[in-house]
Length: 320
Ligand code: SF4
Image (cartoon, rainbow, N blue to C red; front, side, top):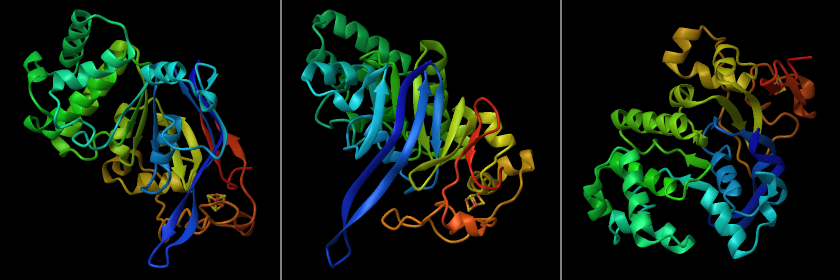
């Protein structure tokens, strides 16, 4: 059952161009229809600049949506306006950011950081809040003594554990994790990924996991969405995507990861050129400027979604 759904979601914003200061429209999310099912880890993968983080912000109501719909537990998120509606939404949907240090107030002790959302948004007693905070800090693998320390007294990995504990205190149903390990050392990344997997398996949490790292994504995900220039071009179960990628862009991303490549013997696809700017989106299939299989119709016509299984879809003219 879907916990969150989007329907034809578009997000665009204006940015100023170079020294001229001329305003340009950045089309970051272009018609995304996606569902996140209760209890799963759905990952969104793609190169930097493909719109992954803008999608995450739109789902969290941190950026304006141009058109389309977002439903959380059947309720239209875009229409949530009152304080109590927003409080309820942010209690159930939490976000973890790439840089844990900048997301923790350096002047507050960890205990205060974790207590604050409960003091503001609930009527729980001080004792109840302390119990919850102690429970959450231990769930993320830190000792209770951490609550009396400041963020700067922790390593990067420990700070990300604290950021996860802060997300957990409101007992959320969905956590949106935007590149949560990419700022960490490789040795620490595995610990945080294992923690997320543990939380998902033991507390029935649902995650939208955003990353450019396919090795990490393979380990943690139930399903994977491949994003290119603001569109989902392929979506499927993890093993469908890794064993039998359909879209040339997915195959190119997998080709670039040596350890995945060796094990799967996937078709080698080399990307031509750079990711086009979202200010100047290509016509037709947006991947046509880089696709080794490009045909004439790809330059002017937009491919429709094709189904390969109940879960596996792809948008590409290579498939009739
Ligand atoms: Fe390549 Fe055409 Fe498929 Fe786009 S539709 S991925 S350009 S073959």
